[in-house]
Length: 266
Image 1 (cartoon, rainbow, N blue to C red):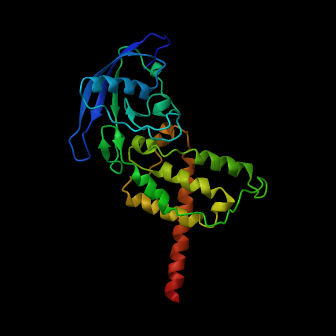
Image 2 (image 1 turned 90 degrees about the vertical axis):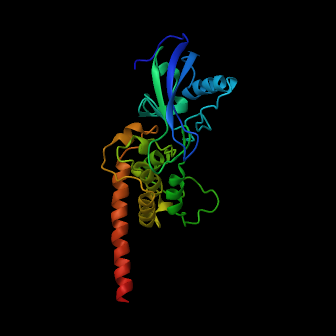
Image 3 (image 1 turned 90 degrees about the horizontal axis):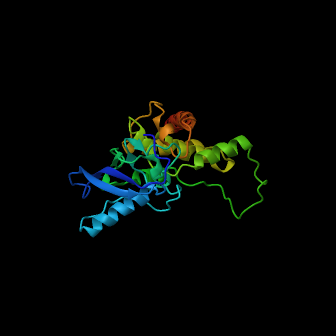
């Protein structure tokens, strides 16, 4: 898909997944998107298509969106089989129609993963991510008021790694792209973010154990380090975070087993 370099309007054919509700049967529906400006974002194009549907008395296509600035992670959808579409390190709301060419056919689907049930059309329930984060608990360190930036020394390598992990917007692209439906990259990013900072050390291993356990309870698939999650992530978070999560999880499991053994002996 080469895209267009001109500013001429395009005519496209959309094949969109439509599903009235969680228990309803879904199907692909075909719509024409005419006079599409290459400078439109993908969501703006869907807005125009929806205006036409409403004008004809048809229900608009439901899709998640909020900031439209690539920050909130709401806009996740599969576009021609790729999470967020053909541009790397780009969310759907940042994807512009110049990525496509006049006459293209575009298939638009929701995330396909058992823990992400479809609510309607392209909208899925990602509450499983919230429960994973909640399982991690809080940081018990009393941070108090804002302190001088140099009061708590943090090596630059750790600060950089923490910031890279904190870039995760929880969009779910990693899960949708993974052939196993694993949420390991998301969970690892959240664990790694705090695990690199001094304030996150007291609960570091306990947090990993709880979050990984919750991830399994949500029925996400196992990670085989296939790597597609890293390629699909709009924030380019590395799968190195998964290796760190696995180490913390193993350490936490050993610590828990030792605690149980001591408790049993007492």
